[in-house]
Length: 261
Image (tube, one colour):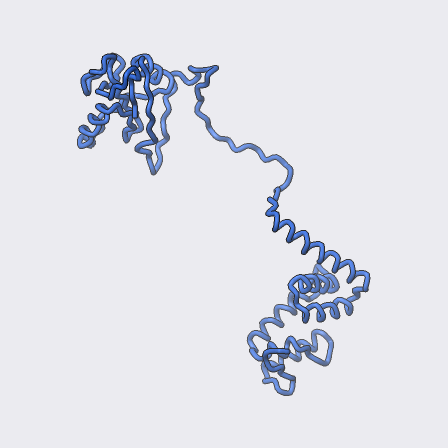
């Protein structure tokens, strides 16, 4: 039973009567069904809904029978009894047979079943089978066990950007062959000696402390600063060897040697 009063033609105001007249003229009937009588309780909704239905269901690329059958299929899926009955009648009037109705309901039932199966299993969508061209990505050559010097002499530099990286990470390593290891890093990975930058004098003490702790730091200009100890572990803080490497005091752990943090 409707939750609102059904407004008959003789009870309607002029605005509602104008919509009723258009419905009857468009459909070539002399009556208005209950759906429109219920919407007449709010004339703006009645007028807006009828104008939309009239435009969408008018003959176009899809013939009226196809549109009515689509409307029926959606109504059956949504569980609207009123719309199922209304558009079954409309589709029959447009030429739908019992066999067509049977096939339509079979499609509706199958679509709803497979929709729920796909949704339940969360099956991923595959967008076609054609392989897309690869996206070009520049790669810096990397050293491997078979090619340990593949990128020897090639410096690794970060491109300038609005957000320059001040520090990219840290690591800890130990070796009894400090000079050989540092030279390998210089030759293979390409770190350079960090330089004192204008305006960064306030960081001088911090850099000295990092050197004393054996820190491998990244300066604001993207350069790296190596601070290993010498062979006897007593390298003077801030001294520079023939390779341009700054030496500092690091923690000695037996034969571990260099400790870079």
